[in-house]
Length: 411
Image 1 (cartoon, rainbow, N blue to C red):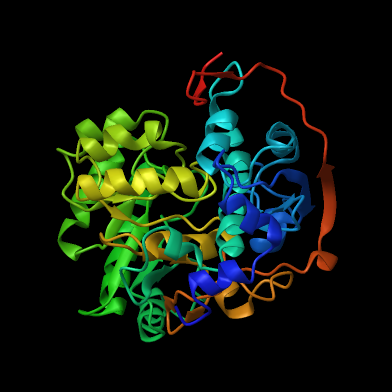
Image 2 (cartoon, rainbow, N blue to C red):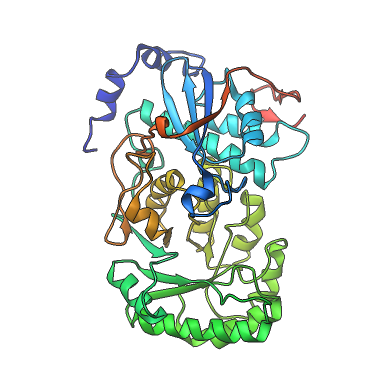
């Protein structure tokens, strides 16, 4: 490490942590004291719209504080789901991240759905940030260390030039590995016209990116199945890096049929949640790239498990961009994954930064670069944010049952 060594970091840590290391009960000696939830403007700030924020794609900031003075930073969640998750962890040991994840996912009558997973993921992200900062190391060190020097990116919403070809060429010249487009727009959405227009846009993107540049297209689940198949056939020989979200996401098993009908590389997963949403796609080799992302899947804890599934079945990672703190977390996650990786970047965010984040991800030359800052490597200026919730009291509406060894089981 370029920073202080693990041993010197421990020596310089709090007396609480030093005592915890000697505790025979294997507990950290710390307790979660408070969870703060800040509004950032959500999608209104990130995407320049009037929408105040998508509750399952929130960029709101979560801070977890311990009685030992440690703080962890996360991102995501809606107010109601975040408050419920936060109240359940007050008083718990922040270092027992796997245990907390099980309590939040399984500790209610129903398993966590995709919207609640977003809040769970925000808390999980903050816990990993807290633990890595307590140990004085960047998160990727807790994940086994880096496997790559930098992470290649593709651009979503690249600043348009006079033509699509010129936009693609400029994107590749800026260092991005690939230029991504969406499907053709129009109302009413005439299936024949839109398939043909999208196919021509793909030809323009291919030509503009050049022989050494990548390009990709997001179908955005907009096409019916037969039109998605027809479009895939029309662009089959253009060498797409990937084709994303070919059809609606309610039934992953549809790709058992689609896989035999199209030959383009398939990337799916940004609309899904935990590994149980994706294991059929990955284990069945029905996709080439998994679009799983944080906090949507339930945070860092769950993403690591999905990544292991992907490596086992030779599936690459192309995570969806949800927010700037999550993007910083993904640098650590993808940086420690040994398989193929490509990360989504919004050039506007990369160029302009995020006002309330003095430090977030490190981006230059079209690539994301790991750093050695402790934790996620993120700093938040809360003076620029709105405090939405402060949770200090524990509530747990359903009982938590544990086996004789202390592990969680369903109630």
